[in-house]
Image 1 (tube, rainbow, N blue to C red):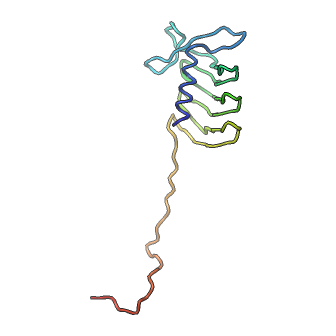
Image 2: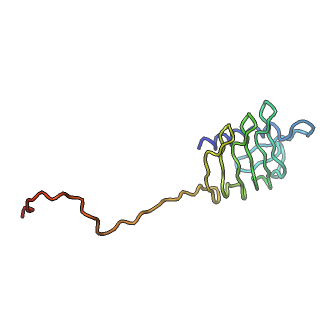
Image 3: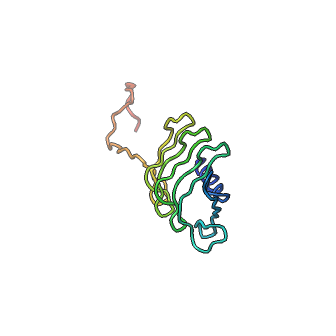
Length: 143
């Protein structure tokens, strides 16, 4: 869940602008309907989402379509190493999301479908006849 907070914090930075250097800054905001809009606009935002860390390294990159995140998204650590990569479908996480530590080593992987993390639960069958582990004592059971 910690990475969700990181992603949400990163998206908040989008409110202050999507572009860096030679590009015109575009401020967007997420509204009550959950969609992203250019500040002051009445139609949902479509375009590139690119945010930088204060040190100039990329923080986050992806695309919006009609106010929803779509396609591949990447999030980087401040040192430039990839932190998260995955994909959105219709504004929801979808497919495999991979997390990396600050050294670039894969540290976690999760699968998502329509914004819900898929948890695999293994069930082991229990045999109806289990081998006896009791040690005979030489006494007969009481009746």
